[in-house]
Structure formats: structure tokens, C-alpha cells
Amino acid sequence: MKEKVKYLIVGQGLVGTWMSYHLEQAGVSYKIINDPNIQSASSVASGVINPVTGRRIVQTWMIETILPFAVNAYKKMEQQLNIDFIKPSPVILLHPSQQMQESFEYRLLHDNVYLYKQDPSKWKLFFETPFGMGAINNCYWIDLNKMISSWQTFLATENKYITAHFEMNDVNFLENEIVWKEIIASQIIFCDGLNSMNNPYFKALPFAPNKGEALIIKVPGLSKEHIYKNAVTMVPWKDDLFWVGSSYEWEFNNIAPTEAFKQKITQSLDQFLKIPYEIVDHLVGIRPANTQRRPFIGVHPIHKQLAICNGMGTKGCSLAPYFTNELLQLLEHNLPVEPEASLKRFDTILTSLK
Ligand SMILES: Cc1cc2nc3c(=O)[nH]c(=O)nc-3n(C[C@H](O)[C@H](O)[C@H](O)COP(=O)(O)OP(=O)(O)OC[C@H]3O[C@@H](n4cnc5c(N)ncnc54)[C@H](O)[C@@H]3O)c2cc1C
Image 1: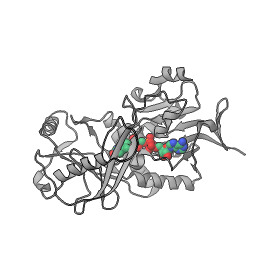
Image 2: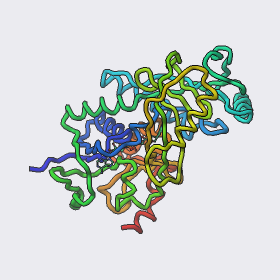
Image 3: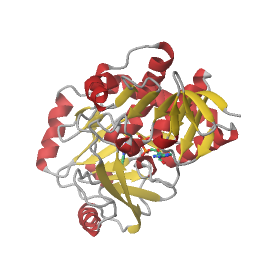
Image 4: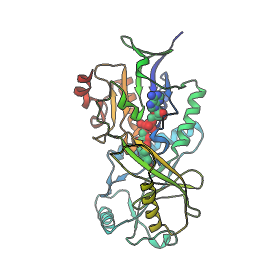
């Protein structure tokens, strides 16, 4: 006998985790399918929320709305699971050039909400700082692997998690529902990251996968209360480790770690880090980015049984809690999605595909 649920979610990375969390809070029935053999972007991400971005150190898109929503949501999930995984972690800026120092000084005086000065003498045992220092407030570090695996345990206990590889060919469309194996659902919600690029109903979306590498290093003696940003970023990782990265490659032939990246990061570390370190791992992942740098949130214009929450790019940690809730509000209450993130902007292209 088939089991009926309202939603079938595909993928339990960061986005599928938040989608299922909001459905859980709303008391709506769902199941989530995840294939742990597919490497997720979330499993190698450094887990940083930073309210400013880029060389000009400007505020991140929608940050005043998204940041308080995200922090509150992470804390609520922590409470529900009775574990800790979000931590305030100011970013210490070790300006890598005079130009970056000038950018910081300019931004400190103009439209500044998050920046503050930093005394280099406090850090002189640890870092070379020829161009001075600054800092960013309201930054957070999230232990994504801890959060996602703990939520998965909860889902499994509730009998809502299915370990399986999802194939579109296994789906049968009924008039207002879909059937996947033993499950009947009103809608499928695709939270499957880059896999959506191969989905016949969504492959026309302007995905632009972006490869990122990182080293995991041991740095005995360096405080884990901060994130450190030079030309590279050093983020506290689990145990006594730091995550160091990353690269942003729009064109790549394979998804393997490269010697060139390792050398580049090592050179950089050797220049600014004064204390010894040891490399213990080399990670690589592909960001589900897109040419518009905005999420894809909504329902397929023709096949109303198919919804998507994707395209989080480099900012999944801050965007995912908010935009999965926007999708829930659309599906359950027909409330509009933020226009810049709405799937409606692709209605023409998705309609012509099928
Ligand atoms: C090196 C690196 C560093 C990053 N650092 C940060 C950072 O500091 N801050 C930040 O905000 N963002 C960061 N990001 C970006 C962030 O990782 C992404 O925005 C986010 O993780 C995307 O989440 P997602 O759930 O959409 O995709 P994913 O994490 O890729 O999850 C997709 C899920 O779907 C499952 N799946 C896929 N296909 C199938 C299938 N056919 N059947 C079943 N299951 C399937 C996969 O197993 C996976 O669990 C970083 C990314 C990289 C690569």
C-alpha cells in the first residue's frame, strides 16, 4: 500500500535541511530522499555568514532581513535538537594590500554598520600585518556537518528520511499528485543542489557551477573565537582544526583537488602566519551557483507538482533559512516570493522547455 504525504523533498544538504525544518514546524506531512553517495556542497562549505562582501566591502544582498531571520532560525533548531552549532565569530581582516586597506578605511566612514577597527599589536605574535587590520561584526560560524547530520538523525527517528537515489524516470504524474515508488505526494520540492541541472524540467535555469577547494590545517595556539581573512580565509573547523580557502573557479575540467591550489594557499599562509601549521586534509566542492547570483524559488509554470529551492551559490548559510520559508509560504499560503529570487522570472524559458 502506498503512503500519502503532502511534500516529497529531494536532497538533504543545507537547503533540504531547512525546507524540512520549516515543514516540520508548520506541522505539514513530508518525506525527504537523500543520496549520501553524492558529495554535497554543504559538506565542504566553511559555514560562514558574513554581512559584507567583495573587495569594496559592501553589504550583502537583503542582509538586514536575512541575517536576523537566519540567526533566529539556527538558534531555534539548536534548541530543538539540544546541540550547539552556531557561534558568533567576528572576522579579523588582515588587509592583503594597500588598496584593501583603503577600501576598509573608506567603508568605515561611509554607510558602515558592521566594520570596526582592530589593534594589530594584539595579533603581532600570530600574523604579519604590513597593511594593518580591521574587523567585521555580526559574523557567524555554523558547524554545517554537525547541524545536517543531527537533523538527519531526527528525521530518521521520525521515519521521514529515505536513503535513496532519486531519478525523475521513477516519477509518475497523476492529475494533481505524483507517485514515486511507494509514496504519493502533492508536490516534489527539489533541494538537490547541482543535480537540478540534469532535471528535464529545470535544466534550462541559468546554473553556473563554481568549484571551490579548501585545506584543513592544524594551527596549535591560534584562538578559535574568530575567523581570519587575508587573501585567504581561515575558519575554525571541528576539533582543533581550521578550514582555509577558497578558490572560485567558473571553468574547470574535473572536480579533483589540485596541487596548484595547495601551493597557492601554502605560499599565502607562509607569508602572513607567523606560527607553525600542518596540513591534514584537502577538500573540494562545487557551489550550486548561477549567472544571476540570486536563488531559484518557486513552482514550475506548467507542472504544478514540481517546486524548487536552489541556486544559493556562495551564500547558502545566510540565504537558505529565509528562502526555504519563502517557498513554504508560497506553497501553503500562496504568498509571493521576493521577486529577485522568484522562479517566475524564468516562466517563459521553463514553459518553452516542456
Ligand atoms: C568550498 C566551499 C565553501 C563554501 N563556503 C560557504 C560559506 O562559508 N558560507 C556559505 O553561506 N556558503 C558557502 N558555500 C556554499 C554552500 O555550500 C552552498 O550554498 C550550499 O551548501 C548549497 O546547499 P544545497 O542544499 O543547495 O546543495 P548541496 O549541499 O549540494 O545539497 C544537495 C543534496 O542533494 C542530494 N542529492 C543530489 N542529487 C540527489 C539524487 N539524485 N537523489 C537523492 N539525493 C540527491 C545530495 O546528496 C545533497 O545532500 C561554500 C561552498 C563550497 C564548495
